[in-house]
Image (tube, rainbow, N blue to C red; front, side):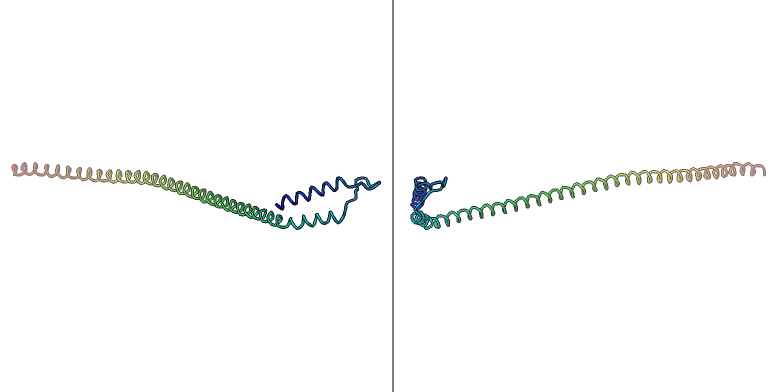
Length: 162
């Protein structure tokens, strides 16, 4: 009701200004009844504070909601950025660990190949030395056997002569 009342007062003021007599040689200036206009403005002023308070409350509530939504949005963005950073960091750590594991695996495989080659060379050398020692021992056994045979063959001939 007060809203309509204020609009009526404003319309009456417009009508008063439009219907006012022009001041001679005053251009756009006119004459109004001061007390009547002031009374109307006072009535408007009496009606406006409640509406202004209500509209201010609405504007403040809206601004507060917008501010709260903005803070929440900023918080969500910060959390998302932090989570993304953590995930990137975890991914980087995972990739670095994976690379280090692959390096260790490659070095281990290389070391195994080196040890295998070295052990094969050592075994080949040990077997060669063993083979040479056995060949030498076999040669000594054959030589000793040949001497033994020659001794046993010559003794019966000496016994027969003697």
